[in-house]
Image 1 (tube, rainbow, N blue to C red):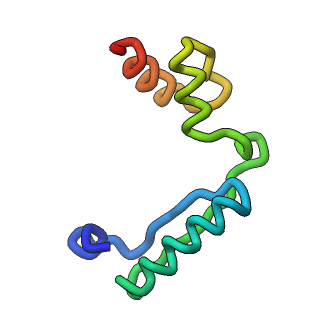
Image 2 (cartoon, rainbow, N blue to C red; image 1 turned 120 degrees about the horizontal axis):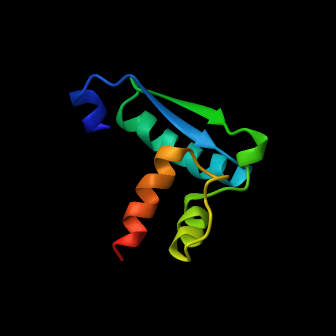
Length: 87
């Protein structure tokens, strides 16, 4: 929250996929609200086609040289391939 204050951030946007995400994110937002009540947290729900995708799944598929192009935007595909090709 200190970073937000120092950089003039008034809102934090967090993405949600499931009720599990909501419970986790709500806990964090509640703590942040106590630390910096002037900074709002906004939750956005994902589209249905992305509901079951997580960064862990994408990283695991990429680590086995699998095709992640249907799961993430092209600029993300490039960065992930760069990361895993150097390992």
